[in-house]
Each structure stands twice: as structure tokens, then as C-alpha cells.
Length: 266
Image (tube, rainbow, N blue to C red; front, side, top):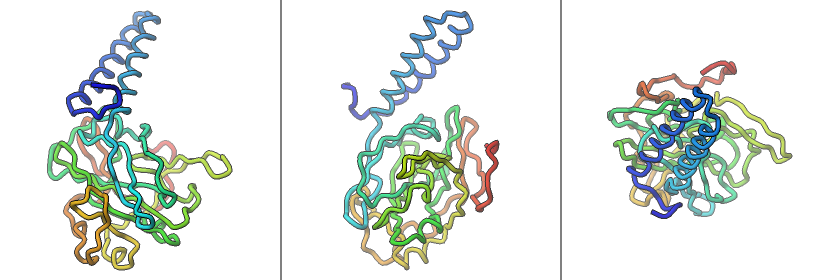
């Protein structure tokens, strides 16, 4: 298949396995002090990783409530063991509209077996939520979407839009990152942990018009015009805390409470 073409789950799994195998062989080569071989293996591992990220599908995660433009992003729907889910992974996003602010998310495991990779995945809770501090900003509106995943999971992208975008340092990390890394309008880099409290009580936000959702049969390409009390994301079943996934499975880590996190915290 041509480079850049969307990949199947089998091709995705092969690329991940190739990268892991090549890195393991590199470690063996380094133990044997075969630096030249280790260099070749590292280059091959990087090539497998780049192909994985390049060929991930680009999906529509939301529709802007201000200009109706579709918001798209790369996504790995095949499992939480994919490198896309690593906190610091590169995640492609075609240029969004000027109203786009940030994306959050949740993953409902739907009582399916959950197995991750050799890194922690900060998947979010199992049901959609909002961040009151950000949603209370002037003209800010959040939109809930839905993405099916092959293991039987359901992912819920939650995209924030504003008529006038706030300074990037006032926003929060893009899902599924752990840390909000940014560069200000003046070119100054910065970062911070996500500690803003979450709110799972969606009804008041829906009633106020600050929260909307994508029409269920639209592939996130149209906003619903149904009354707020018909929102399908009210009262969903699922754990309402940060779910961290790795090879051991899924573990609940509680919810942010606004208290500072020490840099050594994992």
C-alpha cells in the first residue's frame, strides 16, 4: 500500500510490533558495543514509527458552532496500545478554524477488556465532562462528538470553541496529553499540569447553550438542533475519574481538584 494511505488494524499492529522489535534489537546491539548496527536499527525503528503516525486516519472530531467548519485530527481507533495515545506523541491536525481553542476527551470501555502498551495513557474518564473554568470564558462553547473504536470502546472528543480565542496559556492540555505545553503570542514557551476541576453534570451547561453535541448519525459533521434534554450524553454509565491505561489494564486516578501537582508526581 502506498505511503500515506490510511492503514488497516493489521498494518497498524505490524508497524507497532516492528518498532518494538527493532528497539529491542538495538538494545542488544548496544550491549554488544555494536554501535554501527545500533544506529541502523534506530533509523529503522524511527521509520516504522513515522509510517505509523503518517498513516493514522484523519477523522472529523467536531463541527464549529460559529462557522460550521469541520475540525479534523489524526486518531488511532484500533486500541490504547498505539503510540498516538502516549502523552507526548505528535498528533496531526489540519488547520482548524479561528474559533477552535482545544480538545478534551473521554473513552468509555463499555465493559470490554482494556489492555495498553508500555506507557501510561491518560484516556480521560469514561463519560463526557466539561471544565467549568474554561467553559465559563466569554463566548466559549464546548461540543461533544463520538468516535467508535475497534476494541468496542467509544471515544468522546469534547472540543472547545470561542468567538474570540483566549490566550493559549489560559487553556488546557489537548487530549490525551498530560501536560499543557504552549507557546504564547510573544513566542514564550510554557507548560503546566492540568489541575482544573471537572464537571460531569452536563444538563445546566446544555440548558445555557454553553454545551452542544454533534448529531449522532452525522460522523461529527453536523450539530444537533434537538432540545437539551434529548442530549444522548446525559447520565451515561461509566467511571467519572481519570482512567490511566497501560499493560496492567485500566486504573482510576481520581479527578483534578485544583490543587497543584508536584513535578515528581506520576
